[in-house]
Amino acid sequence: MRQPYRLTFISLISLCLLLLLGCGSKGDENFTNPETALAVSKLKYSPDLIERIEASFQLGSLADPETVDVLMEVLQNDEEAVQINCILALGEIGNVKAFDLVISYFGKNDILNDVVFKASVKFAKKSDEALERLISIVRDESLGAELRTLAARALGLSKNKRALDALIEFLYSDVPGHHYAAAGIGRLGDPKGFDSLVWAIQSEDNMVRKMAAFGMGKLGDDRAVPYLINALEDANEKVRLQSARALGNYPLEGVVEALIPVLNDASTRVRISTIKSLGNLGDPKAVTALTKLLDDPDETICLRASRALGKIASPEAIGSLKTALSQNPSSRLQGAILSALNEISTPEALDIINEYKAKMKDKKMEVEGKTIFLEEEESEDEF
Image: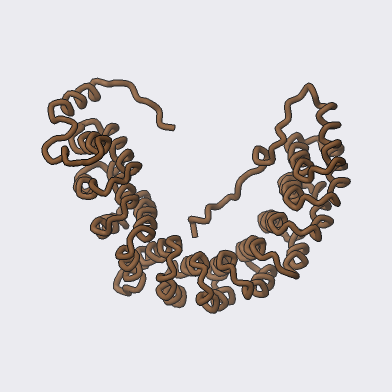
């Protein structure tokens, strides 16, 4: 939440200037929305950088199409902190006339690169012409690999199937960063991309296989399951992790049986992804294997197993959860177990909860699972 700032001497000067200029100076009075007119006046005329930053942020929230020219003008003449918000605001508006200017800021530094990427995703979702521009960038071999990769990532996140052919071409290329295309192909959800992901998951490149597993998880094509099951034995930890995670999206025969042995993987991260997938699948066949993890030396594994058992919500887990509740002194794990029992919600499970509360009546304990668990380490937007 934005904190109010104190009225400084500079702010007083800014206010006086705005009053002299009018909330709508020459040309600014044409804005339909009074909020837009005031924000534009601050952005264009305030000498206070903080005010200009806030005004540019507000214009992004308003996403008023009438402000495109103003934002483009300020983008080319103000400080980087203001430029960042102008780029994001132009992305929110999605008018293709600003697209080339926004793209021109790619390559200046890492912060602007990230901002341009986010704006490009917005452009691709809002403008068919901008989508075509991004497709052209991906295909233009005269451009740098980083810019082409940015365009490929943006196309994948646009989820527009018109980008499929360009992404497949980029995946098959030898451009550094081409592995991102596999994630994008999966996000598009078009079965026509399946063959390219099969090629990718058999690549010698670890990153290509990793992204192919991620893409197969997003694709929603049942034909991916055998390839993902095979990839659970990949030598690369990240490939196994993404494969285990992807299989959680496929509640098909044989998937649970393939995931259960992976609970013993050498990598804790792979084990965690496997536990989460088994919970998402909700198949009681996984209960026995998951209950064995309630006394794992790694508390994170115990927490995740408790959460998965809560999602499956099978009464078969009640006995093991009760034992773990009584034997483990960790308040975090006890809270997770109580959450799982609450999800199961049979009379027996609720009795265990009430008995525990009676014993702990002098202590406050959070029962909500969401207060117990850590979120996933990486954002999917990285792909």
